[in-house]
Length: 226
Image 1 (cartoon, rainbow, N blue to C red):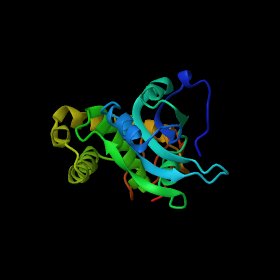
Image 2 (cartoon, rainbow, N blue to C red; image 1 turned 30 degrees about the vertical axis):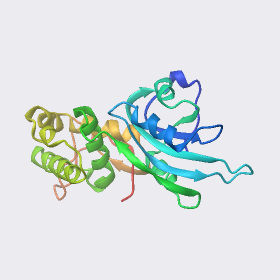
Image 3 (spheres, one colour; image 1 turned 45 degrees about the horizontal axis):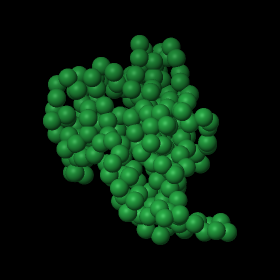
Image 4 (cartoon, rainbow, N blue to C red; image 1 turned 135 degrees about the vertical axis):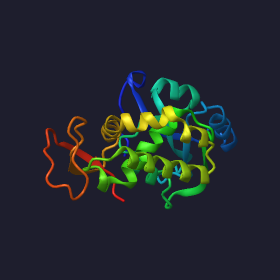
């Protein structure tokens, strides 16, 4: 589970574990108000739980996603909350939805009209999670845009207002040009199961069936399981 680091003011991250204790007059309605006041490009999900220790305190166990943000800024929006950096976002997502201590689900809250950089980061998170088997191979520009359009379509059906971002020529150009840079960045941020992959931007591996790739660099990456 997330490991605490100190001091909070020195930490910058994208994924956070929040434990908000519903004690000493703090209520679910008060927590709802904190969530509604957080920045538009933040998103939170989780549940209300009953503690399993001797005191069995009622609390909210939450997963917060932000752009690169300092822990002290998170603390300003979530006072009286235990804040930890999430070292494995996939494990944290499972942890905040575990059934054994659940009292009530906390509805996922996120901005439905996010900015470009939020959509871009979510796209690469989605690609690395759903298409880990393809990371060892070169991806042609046409195929990159195919995955981008699939992601935009899924997001639109899920209620996100990102159709204009999806067809913007500048954003589509960024997806093609910086593909390997963003994949490497996503892998560095979130590393679950290990596999050897080639992500050298100057010499990526060929498509499947193209023979043995000349690898100038092999990165020991960690990828989520399907």
